[in-house]
Length: 63
Image 1 (cartoon, rainbow, N blue to C red):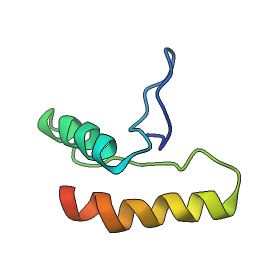
Image 2 (cartoon, helix red, strand yellow):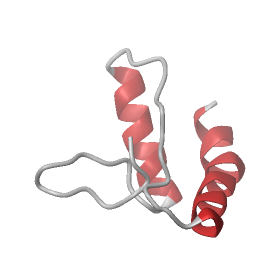
Image 3 (cartoon, helix red, strand yellow):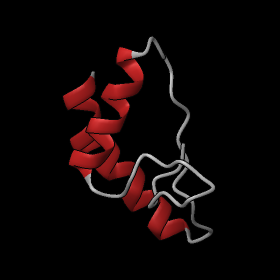
Image 4 (cartoon, rainbow, N blue to C red):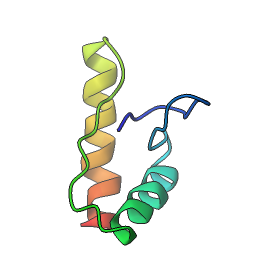
Protein backbone atom coordinates (compact mmCIF):
# COMPACT_ATOMS: atom_id res chain seq x y z
CA UNK A 1 0.00 0.00 0.00
CA UNK A 2 1.19 3.46 -0.80
CA UNK A 3 1.46 6.33 1.60
CA UNK A 4 -0.15 8.69 -0.86
CA UNK A 5 -3.55 9.99 -1.85
CA UNK A 6 -5.77 7.40 -3.50
CA UNK A 7 -6.66 7.79 -7.16
CA UNK A 8 -9.59 6.34 -9.11
CA UNK A 9 -7.31 3.52 -10.33
CA UNK A 10 -5.17 2.94 -7.22
CA UNK A 11 -5.98 2.47 -3.54
CA UNK A 12 -3.61 4.02 -1.02
CA UNK A 13 -3.52 4.21 2.76
CA UNK A 14 -3.35 8.00 2.70
CA UNK A 15 -0.91 10.67 3.81
CA UNK A 16 -2.20 11.82 7.20
CA UNK A 17 -1.71 9.59 10.27
CA UNK A 18 -5.43 9.46 11.14
CA UNK A 19 -6.33 8.45 7.58
CA UNK A 20 -3.62 5.77 7.48
CA UNK A 21 -4.75 4.40 10.86
CA UNK A 22 -8.39 4.33 9.73
CA UNK A 23 -7.55 2.49 6.50
CA UNK A 24 -5.13 0.05 8.14
CA UNK A 25 -7.72 -0.73 10.81
CA UNK A 26 -10.33 -1.40 8.12
CA UNK A 27 -7.99 -3.93 6.49
CA UNK A 28 -7.34 -5.57 9.87
CA UNK A 29 -11.08 -5.94 10.44
CA UNK A 30 -11.26 -7.81 7.13
CA UNK A 31 -8.63 -10.25 8.37
CA UNK A 32 -5.51 -8.78 6.75
CA UNK A 33 -2.60 -9.50 9.09
CA UNK A 34 0.22 -7.79 7.18
CA UNK A 35 0.40 -4.65 5.07
CA UNK A 36 3.50 -3.86 3.05
CA UNK A 37 3.76 -0.12 2.62
CA UNK A 38 5.66 2.14 0.27
CA UNK A 39 6.42 5.83 0.69
CA UNK A 40 5.68 6.25 -3.04
CA UNK A 41 8.55 8.65 -3.68
CA UNK A 42 12.01 8.48 -5.20
CA UNK A 43 13.27 11.14 -2.78
CA UNK A 44 15.13 9.41 0.07
CA UNK A 45 14.44 12.27 2.51
CA UNK A 46 10.68 12.11 1.81
CA UNK A 47 10.69 8.32 2.15
CA UNK A 48 12.56 8.52 5.47
CA UNK A 49 10.16 11.16 6.80
CA UNK A 50 7.14 9.07 5.79
CA UNK A 51 8.52 5.92 7.43
CA UNK A 52 9.42 7.85 10.58
CA UNK A 53 5.86 9.21 10.75
CA UNK A 54 4.50 5.67 10.40
CA UNK A 55 6.81 4.42 13.16
CA UNK A 56 6.04 7.35 15.46
CA UNK A 57 2.28 7.82 14.93
CA UNK A 58 0.70 4.91 13.07
CA UNK A 59 2.30 1.77 14.50
CA UNK A 60 1.60 2.64 18.16
CA UNK A 61 -2.07 3.21 17.29
CA UNK A 62 -2.45 -0.01 15.31
CA UNK A 63 0.06 -2.23 17.03
